[in-house]
Amino acid sequence: MLHAALLSLSLALAAAPARDAPTRCDDDAAALRRGLGGDVAPEQLLTSARRLVAAERRASEDPARALAERRRCAQQTEQLVRALAYQLHRELTVAGRGAPSEREFQRGLDVYDLWLRRFGLSGPRVYDMHYFRAELLWAWAVWARASGRPASGWRQRFGDAADAFARVLELNPEGRYTLDAAWAHVLATAEHVDHRPPPWCPVCGYEVCFYRAVPSRGRPYPDVALGWRGSRTPTQTVEDAKGRAPE
Image (spheres, rainbow, N blue to C red):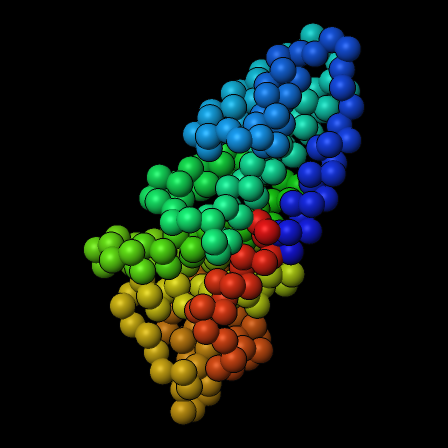
């Protein structure tokens, strides 16, 4: 769950050792760490995150730096930018935090993309970050529809979410979020193409039929679909998504 992920990450950041002679990477990391724990405008946090990633990239390409120092810089940068993504995600999706805006959703997406561009080639967190990014796109689409935005706008948001969930399935067809990602992909695709199928196909079941009509970019997932025969709603999917990442 995102709540557990955020808590463990916060503890790790709090325990990060200080350096006697901080580098530029350390300075930028310290600035972002202070911002995460205080009352700092989200746009300033995003600026700090971008500056930190740029500093980490320069450090990683500097042959004069010790390998251990470069690794430490990369580790703290990855953790801090991921923590910022979780924090903004939670603020956008947890009830009672005020009405979000297009700019705030875009800012949250920008942080996920910043992390994925720098750290998204490999590693144990890549799958989770793609899934949480897809959840944020789903939340943005639901918000846009409820806010009375033009249909062309919110339907495209659902299309973006469908692509993002399909990417999760491609990364790991048997991952921990496969069932949720497959179901969310079906729902988002239905919203995007302006077609909500009936809750049951009279022949084979709702999900199996829909996957035959709208397969993901990879192979269809009939084994996944069979586990979700008419059991959930889009609202429940969104609520589950909130609990799993940024609480």
